[in-house]
Image 1 (cartoon, rainbow, N blue to C red):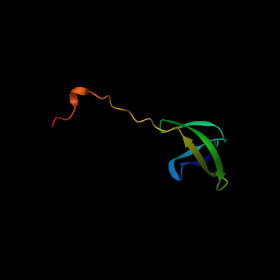
Image 2: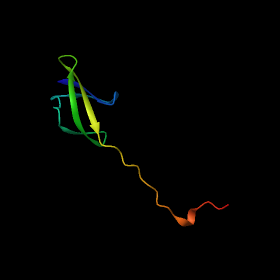
Image 3: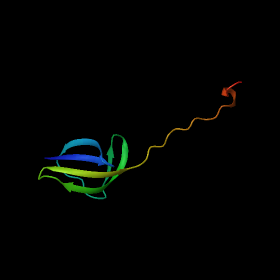
Image 4: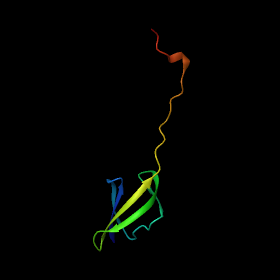
Length: 72
């Protein structure tokens, strides 16, 4: 069993106790977001730091309703 710390841009996203350490280039799903492993660093024999590159979240755009314009 390995303790795996998942990071994105120095922000720790998740700690997990896993049976296998993810490999570089592997696709993962963390907190509902798809990502790809960019690097794996072995800190200790049982502790690993995994750098991720997550897909950016698309912000929902509101439809412009002409009836809801500000009246002055």
